[in-house]
Image 1 (cartoon, rainbow, N blue to C red):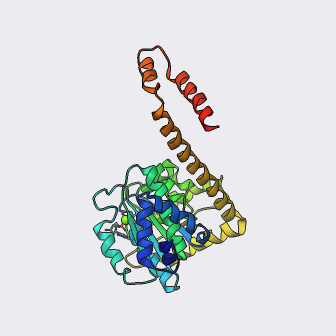
Image 2: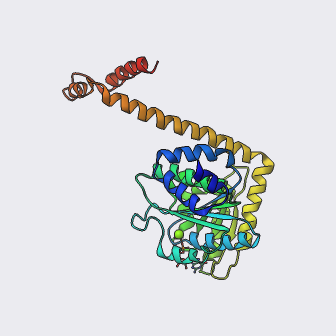
Image 3: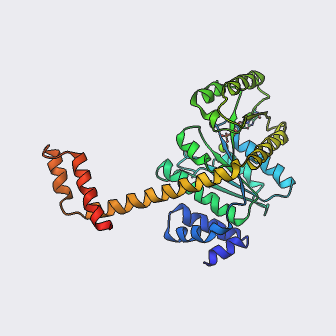
Length: 314
Ligand SMILES: Nc1nc2c(ncn2[C@@H]2O[C@H](COP(=O)(O)OP(=O)(O)O)[C@@H](O)[C@H]2O)c(=O)[nH]1
Ligand SMILES: [Mg+2]
């Protein structure tokens, strides 16, 4: 496909177009994903999660600058499921990111809510793959919140960064919600505010109690206004990256994700093909009536349908 050739050659317009096709779940999008597959796997993916306003965008912005100083090519995906009107891009983010738009070494994409969050997790994964094939060294993904769906989005990341602040019992909530278990680096941003050190100590104590993991998450304090701690954050991410590579975790993780991905695709295909066949069955509605009148029960009918489908699948 032309569009694939162009994006592999570094054409940003082709990249943007390919992303839109994939986001809209068009058949061409599927073809693009198939063709780019051999060119993926080179980008190092870093996920950022945390409450709205904790400073994720500010940190991502600061890190983009850091990586650009090393002349690395950087991609950014901003996922904001809570923002249906702006398609995920808040005005502040746009202004903040505007200065990067002239930089050929930075590619930024915002994604808003489109259907359910499960769908968003799937498209984010695919969009990440296209930007990876385009040839970035580092891909930063920012998502709002710390719920299960956000965790699903962040599951594509090689290193996950959880952003907390000294205010509002953020750390206590994170500890309770178990989100610390998926975080590889913890950031106490807004460390210019009171209680930053106390927040750090709370987190340290919580980490000491968690002995399940080989990797002990690192804690970094940052102040985005002054740039304090940004280099340290980059180093913490690097350390986690080295740990993954040296322990063999990196390749394990990628294998595990491929397994999961095949299962997810399979589940999706089976579901849709079963559903297509089921709605074509002529006695389907009749049986629904029977269940309604208590002449039949839903479990037995589902089993009958399965037996019937078994014949057509063979
Ligand atoms: N005091 C303080 N405010 C910050 C810091 N970093 C970001 N902010 C402010 O926090 C607000 C939310 O930041 P933003 O990066 O948009 O957070 P996001 O919603 O997590 O992406 C903005 O008003 C920022 O200016 C910091 O280090 N200290
Ligand atoms: Mg943001």
